[in-house]
Length: 423
Ligand code: AMP
Image (cartoon, rainbow, N blue to C red; front, side, top):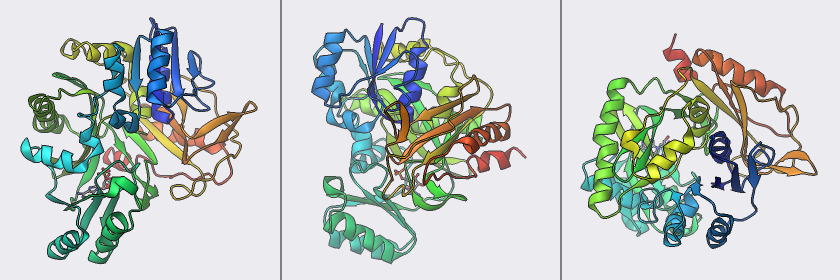
């Protein structure tokens, strides 16, 4: 059987690598893929991004199942299109993907279904938005309504900063159509965790928990990024909290979407803020997180293909996922200038050989004349398993220390919360 994975990041490298290990799979195409998927056994890059052309390819090539990595094609309706042509595909429809593609939809949906989240209001008119900030005070969070590649959220520590964010999004339109509306919400304190499930419209299968580090610099300082590292499991998600998240957040989402006529099938990611044991939703993503996927999938012992096939067939209630008990941790190596203006085209040296407990997943890389070069902001995610989180951390950083490219930046403290909670 042949599969198709859509996307080009570390998340898609990890998904495709795991899928290719399934006994029934001959080949996994990755569209468009990256310098890592180009070299991986069983994978083949495909230089297509247009969703109509991808559907034509899937039909012509007899692709058994397509798995969608990033949010943009989901919001564009790739799942609806593939299904209309009788193609099997795993991911939410365009209507379901609104949980991510419109923050206003997600917030109103949570209100309708009593799912715990921060208080909010949505605005198109900058004057009304400014008045709301004046009334509520700071800290306060300003979010562009649409998809903004992780750059649409401003956690404002002063009213001035919030006013500036409103002007940038609604008046200067720095985020284009994604910023035709803003959601302004209450600032939540606590510790963040990612809770990701496979959903089949009715049932869910939770994946191992994880936590990522969004800020560029050590100690969670500096600007927000797509994610500078992640680890799994997240000790903050205790078994009790796990049960509550499923009961109070995940099941109500599945039930609510089905009631509204849009059964949710695909990966569902809830970004949570946990304050004194109480979870609240910061955001939904309608796909796996990057870089959380890399440590999560390094821990997965079950056949990923069987799990996804089970989800497409609505049989998740019959399946279980088996995890390596050991924690995994991934350190992202980013290019110089990331996140503002990532440098590209630098040669990468010192990539370690992969083994059972260590894998380097590629994101922004390309093969140029047989040489791996940087081609994006987040370049690599060096991911390791260890008997303890500390040992996973040590193994990952040992591998990092051999890798070089011009301008390389990374955090030295990935996993610090989990390491200190184990002391
Ligand atoms: P989002 O894309 O909505 O998850 O936001 C990106 C990041 O902004 C989150 O991971 C949090 O660190 C932060 N954030 C978002 N919403 C809030 C909030 N209401 N209170 C505090 N921090 C937030």
